[in-house]
Length: 321
Ligand SMILES: CC(C)(COP(=O)(O)OP(=O)(O)OC[C@H]1O[C@@H](n2cnc3c(N)ncnc32)[C@H](O)[C@@H]1OP(=O)(O)O)[C@@H](O)C(=O)NCCC(=O)NCCS
Image (cartoon, rainbow, N blue to C red; front, top):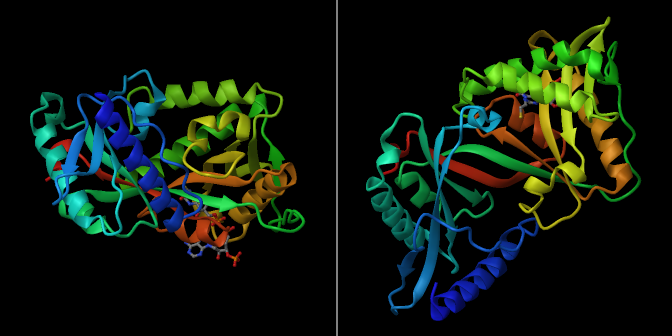
């Protein structure tokens, strides 16, 4: 990248940072732009100056990676940097350039492809442009900050015991994990792959051999009816950069069996985790949920979470218009 362009990119990043912090203090400073598939896409303002830019990242997720279960195998992601107050026009121009760019990429034409943009949930200007280009709000990263005051005591659900899971619980944890994936598939996020069950089993086994696997089961009469899996800050570095607060933990899995829902088991599992996180001084806890899952959003917002980032997606990638 030539020097003048590098300077302009730095100025834009700074302006985007100011804008983000005004919109939502939990947003981080914009990170350095990733290396894209080519030169950045540049939006030019009426005055001829750079009014924003975006980098397109192409990713092939191999079948032996569990990541392939969480979305399309060929992923095309736009990383936008748009300063200014009302960014609808700039977003529209950038998305048009991106669509034209992807139209020339052969790998976008298969069925197992997606085009996505991760957008600050509180940044409402620009949403019309995302919708106009055929993108759908699929997944939300929600955040809960540590409340002021003394850590809240965990609350119990009637007739249910919460206990940490260990190596002997592999089948119980696997069963609930796979049921959660099957449930989440209703909302267009995960894709069941040939290797999904084996890869989830490997992950469960690897995690349960740790002395403190951050996995809890809710049991009624000795039967596992609920599961919560979390990552403490030392394992959540992969997502910590999505927020300004530190340290950050990640809530990875939450599932309560169908006929047991609505009786306080989910809340008891979450409060048990929150008591631990608050006691450790964890500043923020992040999680993913499907925007259209009718059970998760009301539950998470009741538990003190709120939207931070929304992932907008066109699947297959050619649905971008
Ligand atoms: C989301 C889920 C874990 C909630 O567990 P649960 O045991 O049913 O929740 P609880 O009974 O503990 O409810 C806790 C609080 O949230 C509220 N709540 C839970 N689900 C709700 C819903 N769909 N709509 C409105 N409020 C809801 C309850 O009323 C309760 O409020 P209260 O504290 O005022 O009494 C459960 O529905 C589930 O497993 N769903 C399928 C898997 C899933 O969606 N997982 C989350 C993926 S991100």
